[in-house]
Image (cartoon, rainbow, N blue to C red; front, side, top):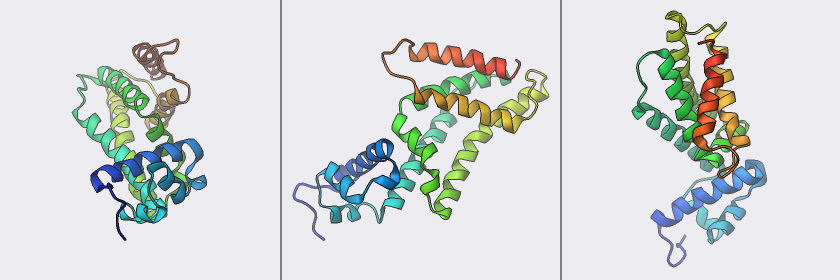
Length: 195
């Protein structure tokens, strides 16, 4: 199948991904067709298959890329010394990273049900690596007597849900700055673990 004149894989491939991400976040994966994605990009529907084998693979690639980027950014993030400082770094990192990627975050959390079992297992493993980083901080704090949580896994899930929830209401230029939101959420997280 011939490419559209002026189409280049380095240009059109990312456009396909951006269009799919925008449409999936706005309308939901199930409601979006390959034809709609092609229309957003400005190519024929058949041309999309030069860039992805199917819609499922496109969703999986978007989720995997988001989580790999998240893990890579956390890996190089300064974490400080001691569980309390590490928890603060995690809270501020999580909010800062996610607020800059609202569409990717929405898809990563809301479209899991649309993944094949095989793709879900890969995404779940990546999510677990990130969640484990927070649970390790909580365990270290618990052992050091700095945190008092009844269950580190449950506490980890509650904190992740609270932190990710910022994306549902935060608006750039609104009443609170990102820095103020990070500060308030850090205070709530610290109190939640009884530090």
